[in-house]
Each structure stands twice: as structure tokens, then as C-alpha cells.
Image (cartoon, rainbow, N blue to C red; front, side, top):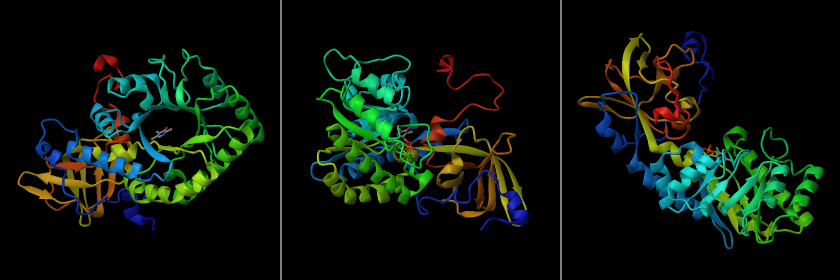
Length: 407
Ligand SMILES: *Cc1c(COP(=O)(O)O)cnc(C)c1O
């Protein structure tokens, strides 16, 4: 029920009602945060190695466990979600591939120890700013018919540009700037025409990336079913088998592990019966891998109380956690000699340090009695876009986060 009256006015219009569900009510404070509960400078982003390797291994096991006879399932971690070298090392050691959307990301991945055959290339500008390796890549998914034609023709000293070449599909009814409308007969004709130029030793693939949070899980599975149908049609029209399906990313960690992967395992046998030469399913998890791996430590600057609620102003802001309202987090309050378990929901707010109206980090938290300036708040699960899209703001300097001079 939407909040009304005075309570409604205290709620930030910018945060959806379910923005701040707690992920695990009895979750302990990650041990990696404990040495950082009284940091010299806040806000402080803390990478959590104790969570990292175990979580990556769990995702890795669950992904490969979704395989069925003849079809392996493999994860290609989305580099853009968080390119932290520690994270890349963890997924590398666990056997993941990576998904890159630019040659700068390819360069970063190669430096992190990924051979080109472990890199999946995606997006509309995958050769930008300049090719850094001739490959061959693991897979290249084209964003247009034109790009498919160029990729099929791409010279590569006798070797194919990638083990898998395919197109990204824009399913019917999905509004997106990406992909080709394979359900349009003239587009299908054009794709079939381009495939005649594709070397026979390259495996054909199809890619779809529609974040399940945008459409809901039931619709997401319908879309996947539609892509399988489109793949079967493409096979019969082109005479080439679809060997690889790439189902993209966009899942929250729990949704991937508890919902998507078990269902994929149940579904895949049927998919194989429709696409008889399918031998690989790729997934491109980003946030499902990265989200739990970073926490933010921020200090309470001021406390404001009324009879029914307590608000705090903290020294973090939406610039530090720009997607804070989009996913679930756990919040702890720590003070010397006193540590409060995961904070429950309530009528209090966590207000960011800037003078932006939208700078509200939480608007329904129970801020414990006795909270005072100087206490520290810990926010978990900020390892995905809350880290990679964070920016400098309100600090009186003109430096930009992307300034090479700053690194
Ligand atoms: C960004 C992106 C991903 C990863 O998405 P997450 O939301 O981080 O899981 C995967 N595939 C493609 C094509 C993407 O653009």
C-alpha cells in the first residue's frame, strides 16, 4: 500500500516500495569488513575476498550443473558490471569466460589472463577503439545484419574470427535499441543471406539479453522459448545448425541460483529436442556474480529524531552508490563496543551527504535508538553497478572518474 499523508511525504519519490528488502535477515557482518569499522576516511568501499571466491565457485557450480546430455552450460562474466581485477581473477580461476563490449575490455581481460577464446564479444562497438588481438574469440554476437555480414567476411589470417558467430535477437514485443528482429521475414532473409558467407567451421549462435527484472521471469521464459523457435526457423531456412544459445545476463544472485538455473536444467532437454545440434548455452551474469563482493562503509554525520522515527545523514551519497534503490542490501550499524545486527525495516531514512533532492539511500529503515554522529553504517551488496557506475560529485574538484591522469 502506498504511504499516505505525513508518512508519504517522508518517503522518497525516487525509491520503489520494495527497494530495500533485506537479503538475509540473520546474515553476519562479512569478516572482511570488521577491520574497517573505524576507517580514517569514509565512505570506504571494501572488497570482500572471503565472500568472493566462495560466491564465484557457487555460481560456477550452479551454472555448469544446469547442463544436460550433449549441452554444456557456461558463464561468461560481464566485465562492464565490475572490471575489478580481483573479481576477474576469481572468475578466471573458476573457469568462467568473460563477456566484453569493447576492445578496452578485451585488453583488460587479456591482461587478467583470459585467452581470447575465453572472451565473448557483444554490443554495437565491440572493435572500439582498436582491435587488440586477432583472436580467435570464443564468440562474437552481432548487433545488426550489417555487422553480421562484416563479421562473416572479417579477414583473419586463415582462422575464423571466433568459434561461434551469431546475432543478437530482439524478440517481438520487446522495446530495445539492440538486436535484429528475426521474426520479420525480410530480416530473416537478410540474416540467411549473410550466413552463406560464414565459414563452415564457425558454429552458429543466437544471443538474447533482456533483463528479467524489466519483463518478469514468466515473460522472460516466454521470450527464450520464442528465441528457440526463431533458431529452429533459422536452421530450416539457412541449412545451418544453431549450436550455441547465449541467454544474456541481468539476474540478481538469488534469482539466478534459486530460480533461473534450476529451471534452465529442466528446460534444456526440450530445447535440445528442438535444436538437435545445440551443444552450448552461454549465460552472461554480471550482477549475479559481482553484487555480493563489495560493501560500503559510511559514517553518520548527523541524527534527526521525532517521536516515530530517526533519520541519519551519512557521508556517502547516490554518487557513491548510484543504483542503491534498485536492489536489496543489508545494513548494519557499528559503533565501538557495540554492533547491531542487520537493521530491520522501519520509518527512518538514510540521507546522503549532497544537496540533491534524490539523494536518499534508504527510506524505510529502523535506525536504532542511541545512534549518534560518528557511528558507522555498512551497506552490503554494492559490488555491481553501485561500484562501476559510481562517480565523483560534490567534492569541489573538477577531476572525473574516467580521467587517466587520476589513475
Ligand atoms: C550488461 C550486460 C550483461 C550483464 O548484465 P547484469 O545486469 O550485470 O547481469 C550481460 N549481457 C549483456 C549483453 C549486457 O549488456
